[in-house]
Length: 325
Ligand SMILES: NC(=O)c1ccc[n+]([C@@H]2O[C@H](COP(=O)([O-])OP(=O)(O)OC[C@H]3O[C@@H](n4cnc5c(N)ncnc54)[C@H](O)[C@@H]3O)[C@@H](O)[C@H]2O)c1
Ligand SMILES: O=c1ccn([C@@H]2O[C@H](COP(=O)(O)OP(=O)(O)O[C@H]3O[C@H](CO)[C@H](O)[C@H](O)[C@H]3O)[C@@H](O)[C@H]2O)c(=O)[nH]1
Image (cartoon, rainbow, N blue to C red):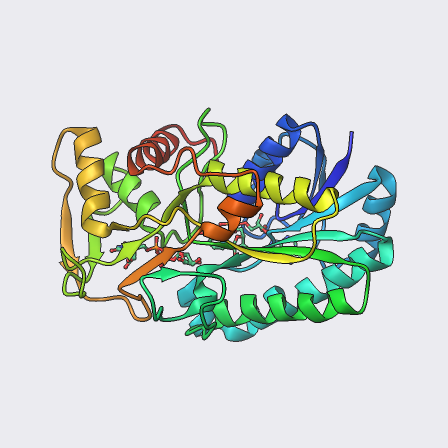
């Protein structure tokens, strides 16, 4: 069984990917400091409780499990916090990440998949964003993710490391079997907040602005189900293990939904009105952020299967009602 090192495998997207790695016949070996992740989410392989800066832990784990490739989910990812405390983001998302990449190379690991974000694009200049769209991030979170993408480019040129950058659009939804889901503290994302409000365990939803230049005035995003997102990692891994070259892919559906549409879908599932209020815009929110997913659709054995709003919201609500952590 080929072992894959999953940095951040105790987190929302990393744990879902571990589940799919195991289903595809790999052994996911998680390295995680549990700063925002959960021990209970590591179910499909061993947990090495360590920081990704810990070179000894990387070397001994790679040797012990004969690690073939690595995935790097371990990062700080709150946009607002990144503006308040940029040093934390530069330290973890670049400093620790570069140390991790270097530790992998020293240990002989040759393939790395990196979790990047649509936040690298900043304010979009086109309705559909291709990977060649200019990258002008507007917050430290996006800036640090872009900086590590660039570091990977140069590190790969000077070593035999090959990388795949996956730029996620809006990760959302929960495991189809209800085993794992989104549990961030503080929670800032629309769909878990909406799900909590729907089951009565959270505050009524605040809509961050209804005066955007969109058909209903609320911002449009490209929501991608976490199960589809995890599947993109398996497809990228298969491509890398069969000799694929370093690449960057958007992971999105190409279809946008507005905040008002998301709420309407939740209301149709609940068959009742959701309590909400219209609040001011949130600083730094673009009006429309939707992927052009042509490159990933043509290059990988992947297509979204569960990213319709109904499935996203239903699985997210189900998780919030029955969550284990
Ligand atoms: N959730 C989203 O909407 C979204 C969108 C785009 C990109 N991303 C990126 O995807 C990745 C995963 O996101 P998530 O939502 O699953 O986050 P998460 O916080 O749930 O998971 C991150 C995991 O990494 C661990 N970690 C962080 N720093 C570490 C370190 N220095 N050493 C060891 N472990 C460390 C945490 O304990 C946690 O288990 C992140 O890199 C994030 O920036 C997420
Ligand atoms: O309580 C809320 C929370 C969010 N929103 C709105 O809902 C939409 C989605 O917001 P999220 O916070 O769920 O997600 P973002 O689009 O802000 O950001 C997410 O997707 C980005 C890329 O698209 C980055 O990857 C980022 O890390 C990730 O959090 C936005 O229009 C936001 O204004 C509300 O109206 N009310």
